[in-house]
Length: 284
Image (tube, rainbow, N blue to C red):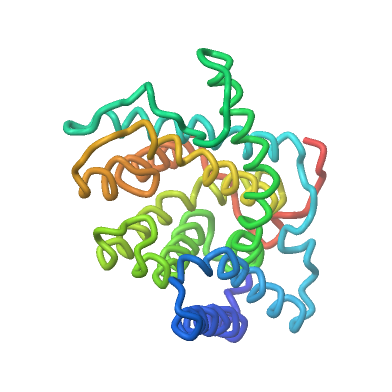
């Protein structure tokens, strides 16, 4: 099998670096936090992937820009919810972290009480996660699980997943250092975010390969981002270390939840990964 092309990878990574530096420069010029510019920054992997694909005549469908298997797209969207639920259970199991059932996970939005409220909350999360959030998530995922997964496919399922996860984590550095996700630990937070991305990545790769579409990653990412606030809302502690590095969707609780899912993939047998991962029949 053909090895990853270093020249294409160099172009891809170089564009990401330009965007990261540009984020810092623009934030300084207009005197706003890089976090405020994060929604625009999210599209930098897509831009980098598109530049490589268009310059090197790589068909976009080849890197997963297609509908693919609809059943697995649904699994990707809905599957984020039990992962968030498991993250919450692991978070509140930590000594020093409590569960606050009275919290309002959707401030400003009036929802029914009781079971109806829970159902409405998850419906809202799915609705936003598969539309608005998924659009922004696609800005990342076309680069990570579209072009880059195709490029690194010769490495195989696990090595490619972890390679993408490492770059994905480091790519977050400009906003993490600015206080995103780990405001009390901006430097350690870069390491923590990279570990989180490494643990998340095999699940994302698995769903993309099964769905034969990068849209699966965008849906999982969108719904996870939309529902992760549930963990932050319900798992309460006054200890910054526990709240940011442990009982968090991108802390130890989230790492363990996705890590358990990755172990499940390994035990069930990870799918083979080739550059033809987006080919074949769709309706399965």
